[in-house]
Length: 610
Image 1 (spheres, helix red, strand yellow):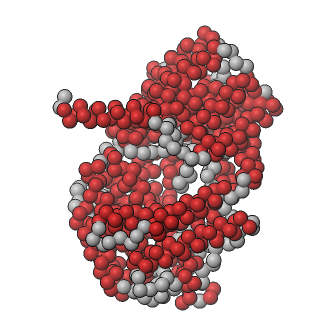
Image 2 (image 1 turned 90 degrees about the vertical axis):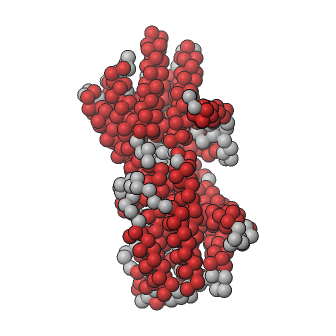
Image 3 (image 1 turned 180 degrees about the vertical axis):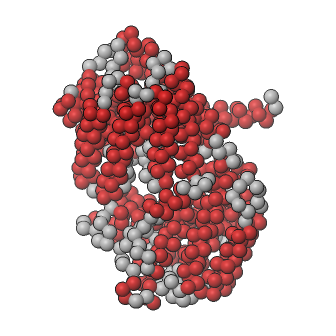
């Protein structure tokens, strides 16, 4: 074996060993996990009192599904919770219905996985991810084989979900504005970091790169915070509470400070036109239609993540049916999903797979110890609740440790085995874990081998396309709400994705989409870089130049109305010609250094003529 291969293998092994013993800092995670689990625990206890602890435990997935959107404000939290809960019930019903026909399980579970994972990532639903939603279908297949039906299992799941959602809303009422406060504080910190940074010397590449990164982080944090604040209440209204109004004021102050710094860097001789343009502030996420349309495009990240997850589920379910001594593939499906459901670089996903195997083995040892003590139904329920807390508290700190708790509560979810059956169950879980993890690793390294560079190139083109629309608005003078008839002037609190097609609303949507794509471009490049650092390193400069030009254009939208229309037209024409000259997004190589140079020239000409 060549020395370079040995060195690479040694580095990877060292990285794996470090990851097993390293607990990443997560301030406040334990307290938030306590609130999340409190709602689940309350739901399970109430159901167990009503139906008995044996049946109460069957509502665990329903109770956990109420955690969808748990980091959102109350209003959006309710909407996401309802959608996720309904999807969990639908998936579980499908699993129960196909349980009598084993040959249907692999194709149906594959289709279910692709649809759920794709929608979850397309709509940016966020933590805890789609695993519990799809796992509800796999568990339905398993429970159907034990004699459970839609009439016996779905009411328990639905009741658990409704009780957990109600409990979580009560907790939100006790600690109001938690999500809004966290978003505003993050925005304030990001703006402070950017504004405290000295204005970079144009000839100092490192300082300019740092300033560009801090500027992007500040703008995206402010934009996200506006989204959180304005989706946390009814559209077109002002906050009803004093704390809500105070948070609005704090965010507006940080936003104005950011605008002044941005304007001073791009157009130092002018002051931003706050009174005319503040109503055109981008307001967070794009519309649902926009998110779904971009996610459906060939080569999108949601399609890659969903494709890998679906492929792993198809392979794991098929192999588990053939090799599992029990013949139910739900644990293999969960093992494949838990590795792939949220997406990451191939290197990170492979480490995650290793953590899954190690954590499952340790979790099975713990489970055997628990079963040997012969715990009663109420004790099993209590252990499951403690395991859920361990999972939530450690999920972002040390994945292998959290998998230990996943294994324990996953086994506690199913009916208690007899002493004679325990050994077979443990053997089956180890085998299905190996099948699921093996399938996921295979999909990681077979599917999307060229995905890193293709994702980055696709996102680069998407960002430039959004930039073209903003430049077109500037060139046409649509940035000026005062020039519109009174009936078409902007409403002060119009929310993201809500527009009636008027010029003002479209201008707002174009700016919002540009800022969103800038944030997504940085996230994709950062996440994919470890998989192909040699090819993606030159694209870092492309990202920086596109970001600089885009924020200069954003700064231009805050100038005196009508200023710089000619410069916007020239830049629009130049970028459109550059996009037309680019080859289709494929494995054909292009020179990112030349692309970055072209963007830098366009930026210099825009600033000089604007």
